[in-house]
Length: 452
Ligand code: GTP
Ligand code: NA
Ligand code: MG
Image (cartoon, rainbow, N blue to C red; front, side, top):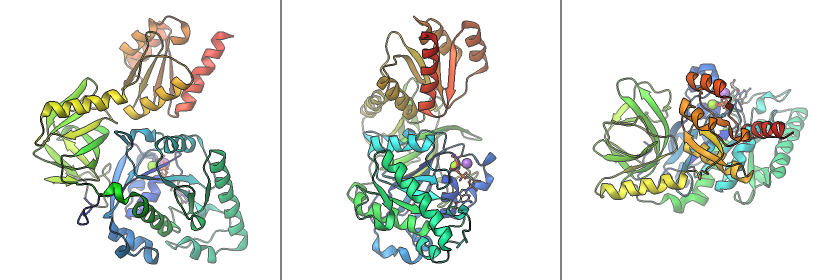
């Protein structure tokens, strides 16, 4: 874990953006490892957390960052797969991330998941910067390995610089179309009212010193008060993923955003059928600068403190849900902690009605985001749950009062084969997508068809 000698919590940085725009490559560059090369098809399958100590940031940022100017211990970066909804990353009362990087491919510009990420950043009021990535793909660009962007620009031809500027102004224009005022980061005075755009290449590393400088500056300037929390109390976190791990059974990957967790603790975890009370069997930590999702040989640790990513092995975690709260009991009454988790779960749960459609999603956060959008469109929900589409979901949909409700919306998960077969038999339509508004648009087109 990142050292906490200063008594300040490590800020949590979410890295978001459209599929293939370069989120994982960017983090790879920062941590100097090659996670991306080891990924199946270069698609990020899981959310990962990477702690980067201040010293490492200082080294990467070169002359732009002097570690002596900062008293934050470093940054905890959370990589999100492009097809995932960022809304998984939430904690009670808002966003789990303190700050975010929205990665946009300068040539591709804004894409569906860029817009989805922007929506969530707006809703959660998370401060962020735009990383205008892949500047090295600008025709005529001469790569300048690891240099700050202004120094790299000194090496570029006027043509290449003009082409880049054209692309950057398109990005700034798209930000404005979406209700954000944005500018090149070096012209931004107040990063809260104006979003900084940092041109960079995750591949060549040019512009990354600038990005790290801006992130450290943002954290130091605007987050310090929130960071001065007592991280010695009982831990609080959010489940990122529920995973089978050889030798450990079902484990949970969590982001611990407050307090500590030890190998001796009893924890309460949000589950599909209510809170799960269990004893930690092992805390499995990725080494500093390692990536939780590719780390095969976890290091067993006695305790960790916020903010960090940690894998917890414990009995009875099969029903744990991504996006659900995790609480350490420690010297509190277990019933009080159960009540706390129950309250948070009910905050997260979706209002259902007597008649409506069935919604299934991969995480509580994405379920909530879909439910919000459906409510705006006045589309009622009869059942909303986390998990793969199963025959019982089809059974519910098949008893709907009208044809437009004989429907299951499935976000970013699998339809079990027997559910598929039963749906065909019962005439239940299953819509699948990994972009929320596309999923809802497909459903609305279907409704329009029926009505005509
Ligand atoms: P998902 O996790 O699937 O959403 O994608 P991602 O946003 O993490 O993108 P990833 O890092 O996997 O990069 C996608 C592709 O773009 C890979 O082939 C990278 O090598 C390439 N790429 C990423 N950044 C750059 C860059 O700065 N320049 C160039 N030329 N290619 C890049
Ligand atoms: Na990718
Ligand atoms: Mg990725």
